[in-house]
Length: 99
Image (cartoon, rainbow, N blue to C red):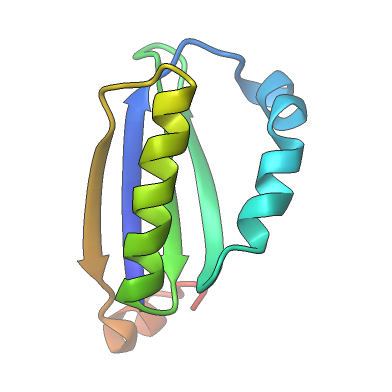
């Protein structure tokens, strides 16, 4: 399994307004190849948003990341920070990770 961490500058909407605005996108993400889950992140004070994703494999993760950076660019978001990590499943299960 592979974890993807993304964050970028973002000034809104947030909270319930964000949930409503991106509901369709959330459903679309559920259909991406190899996705297990996504946690949506937001920091109103720092004006940042992003997500933590779990993928079945690195290939799916990299394909999604490439597509998502292009999508964010089309929204005018340029300063995207992304990191890809292999998941240590044995330790993660010991600490109750949802995998």
